[in-house]
Length: 100
Image 1: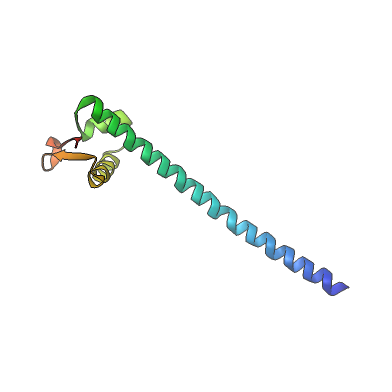
Image 2: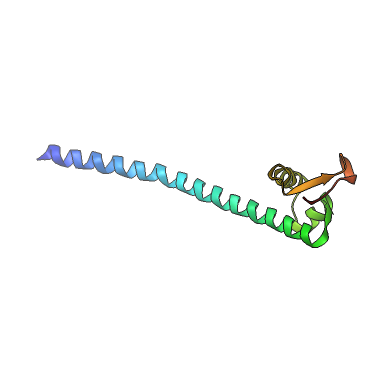
């Protein structure tokens, strides 16, 4: 009879440890989903802003969305690759973006 109690305790310990290690993974996945939704929302806001204004610079987008210059560049590169926008100008301060 004592062996069964020992086996039950071992099984419970294993189940509890598996549950504890799974919870952080689920939290990470939820965070990733939230970040993806935030990214999608920002890209949609950029497209809406471009529809409204026609042509925008990085600083226009940065000020409107209150994000870093690097984030603007990253979003605009993604939107260019998706075929939603095109860059006007080569590099630097003269670069603007417009809808394709």
